[in-house]
Image 1 (cartoon, rainbow, N blue to C red):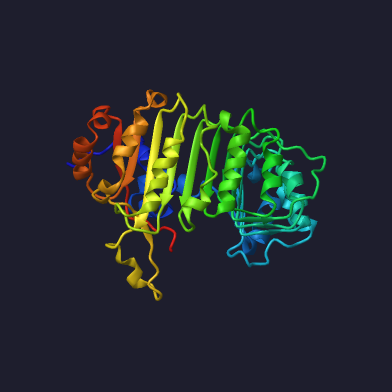
Image 2 (cartoon, rainbow, N blue to C red):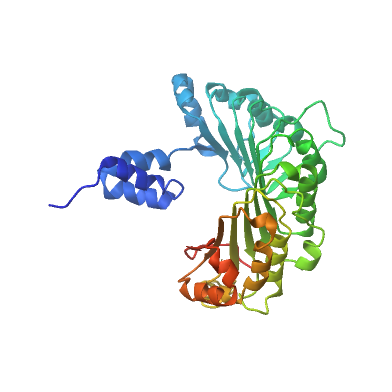
Length: 390
């Protein structure tokens, strides 16, 4: 007789797939006992597209109490150029039946005044707000200031207009800020966001693609870097990094406990790859005696990745650096950095890569005996995944 796992272990295993919708869908079909947990994660977020808006509005109008079960909501269009969600105020009156939404995501929308007014009026319980690939044609400042309980703000590819002078709206003290791309008067917006967030903001995620992005990050760190405990920076080396990162400094982050660096290089992981020097340089800027974990994830042009052959234009896709190729990384330079006094409390340096890490570990033990002896190196295998194309 085949032994059966206790149901709670199945549930625990499925919990690890919470953000993998394809795997959750497969689990739902494989075993009926897995269905409740898989459905919970698969449909955790209520997503409303413009074509389904009228039917969803009808359901809430007929049974308004259903809205009290919706705490995570995504309002979206199928494509950024779609003209959905452009109705008058009456179109969005069903929002009043959604009083307990705490996670709100707006994706691929052009937000005009009617939608803006409905959002600011009815979603007062929102704690986590995500704006993804949106064009905000209304008063962005008033919108961001309209959520009295807001703690987390994520901005990804958002175009907006900012008032020439700050109005009466005051920003809320955020705890988490994620900025992946801004297109607008970024300096004014950031200064406004940070004017009251400094005492509470402890988590920052930021992506650098262009020189302007590095200036934005520098502005944030110079303003409230001393309060940040968890910092995650993604760098895409599309530009000359000597120019892009020249003025960037991580030294203001004196309270940092965890640092994650995602580094994307257009070249292969070889000793001649000069862009990798910047990964070492940024790590050398860290100056926090509270630092406990560092994670480094390097994406490179892997010549063994043949996915470009499937592309009509042979577009190269970046892949996780193979552990065997990471022997070309400047481990001696990293050893000099991590043996400095401010890294005494560091308990883990995680290196993400593809394949078997045995040869890399042997190489580090031979070249950097002091670093290897600290037993803080952790090699995390990652699978080949879709990434940004060059």
